[in-house]
Length: 67
Image 1 (cartoon, rainbow, N blue to C red):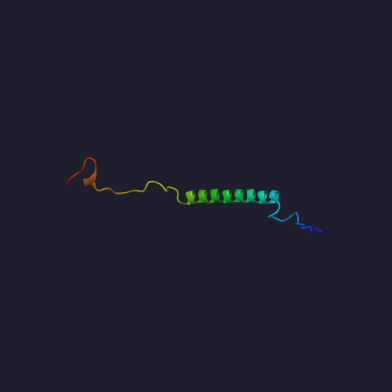
Image 2 (cartoon, rainbow, N blue to C red; image 1 turned 45 degrees about the vertical axis):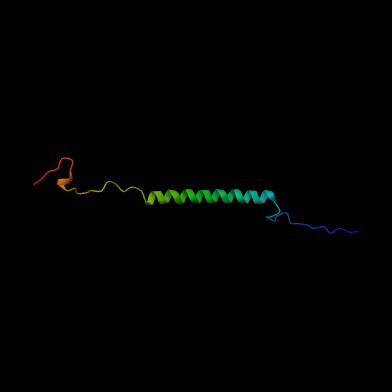
């Protein structure tokens, strides 16, 4: 009675727990880095530009000035 021996290559991604976990770890590091860099760039791009100069009518001041 002969048994068929199924050999799987050791470099197969789906069969090697060590290689797949290492790959997924590095993918998480890359994704987190891209998210942080993208978020930082978006915050920089939409940052506060400063206080704009707004002309306020004199009759709407706290102590209004009438003509």
